[in-house]
Structure formats: structure tokens, C-alpha cells
Length: 267
Ligand code: THG
Image 1 (cartoon, helix red, strand yellow):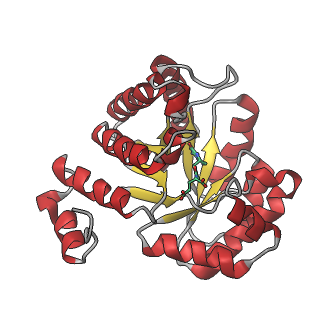
Image 2: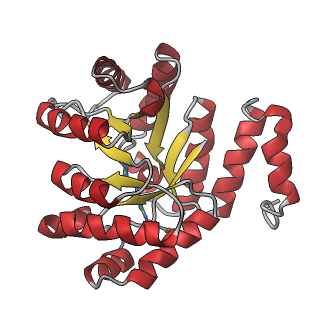
């Protein structure tokens, strides 16, 4: 299971402020706490900074990798900003993301190839956001096929069915689950990823919804997620779900986590 830490995102006030002031110690701290909590990748998103985004994203990639030995999930729709971060990045980044929008696809694909990155493929096209499972499966499927025919290996593709807030219509959530199951079955070897915390936006007790949704999505085959690794119960549920689903041989990861005290105070 690939855990991508979500916390370095300028939609959060403290992060926006730290990025604007180029507060290296603060961003390093947020990278380190996520890495220590089990994040394999650190997401970096400076989308709210508009014209300042390319500079900020380059600075974030440098700052994160100066603090932790982990690759960055470069979270931007802007190919120029993505490339600025890639130029300073060490190791294999994930680009977050490509879509089936023609202009964006054509601009992002060369970066995937040139910098040999993983790629999150969002189920979004020039027709706009998907409104049901059928849309998501059609758009995600054609994206996977196009990426494969353009020479991207299947193991580097992370399909993201686009999680909307449950408060805007819970049928979106079941459509996401159905898309994960169908795409993972149709293209063996492809990964499925979600922006987990989107699901709880605008509702109280957000962590509860994120936790419930994680368990459901894992059971439908999700094997990567952008999430808050500082939520200990969320991380524990991830391990427990995989053990129950037979994705953790002899429950070794579960047993190791228990022995290391990772579940202390949770049950
Ligand atoms: N798919 C892909 N990338 C994405 C998303 C996606 N990137 C951005 C977003 N969605 C995922 N990242 C976040 C980051 C923070 C929050 C939600 C999604 C968030 N944070 C709360 C806050 O700041 O108020 C809660 C933080 C907290 O309490 O710890 O809501 O879908 N490919």
C-alpha cells in the first residue's frame, strides 16, 4: 500500500503562510512528521498561490527532500510548475496528475517520460468532471490505454476516480468504489489511488468519514492513497483492512505493527 502524505497543501492556512514566507523549518517539520508516521511519498501542492506556484513548487520539492529521504508527489495541474519541481527532484517522483484533457495530456506526458516518473491519472476529460461510475470507468480506462500505448508501464500508473465530498451527493462515493474495482480487474497491474480526505469536506467529524471510506476503498482494491498519515487510527485501519482481506501474508505487517506499539490506545 502506497501512502502519500497530504499535509503540505497551501489550501491549509498554516502551510500557505509557511510557503509564502519560505519557512523552511516549518515545511521540513511537516515532511518529517508525515515520513515518520509511514508516508512513502510526500504530496506537495501550492495551487492556491496562482502565479507564484512554479517557484513555490520548486522550493517545496527542495525543502521536502532536504528534510526526508522520500520522493515527492508533485501535485499541480500546471505542466510548467511540475517541471520546475522535477528539475530539482532526486529519485523517482510521482506526477499528480494527468487527465484526458487533450492539452494537459499532451503537456504532461513528455514529463512522465523524460523524468521517468510515476503518474496519477485522474478520471477527468474535456467533457468535465465525471458524474457517475460509467463516466469514471470510461475516462479512466481510455487514459490507461493511452498511457500504455505511449510507453508508460502499467506499474507506474495510479488511476484516481476523483473523490467528491459525500455532502454533495453520496452516490459519488459508491461510483468511486465501483470504478476502483472495475479498473483494477480490467487492467491487472494498474494501481488505484484516491484523495481520501475529499470525501469528508464540509461535514463534521471528518476523520470518522475518512476512516470509514478508507476501509471501503481498500476492500474494493485501492492500493494507494493521499491521506493524513498523522491520523493514527486511519493508519491502523489500513493495516487491519489489508490483513482481513488477505493482502498481508500471515498477517505479518499487522503483527509487526502491533509489536511496535502502533495500535496502542486504539482498541
Ligand atoms: N486526487 C489527487 N490529488 C489530490 C486530491 C485528489 N490532491 C489534493 C487533494 N485531493 C488531497 N489532499 C488534501 C489535503 C488536505 C485536505 C484534503 C485533501 C484537507 N485538510 C483539512 C484541513 O486542512 O482543514 C484537514 C486537515 C486536518 O485536519 O489534519 O481537507 O483527490 N490525485
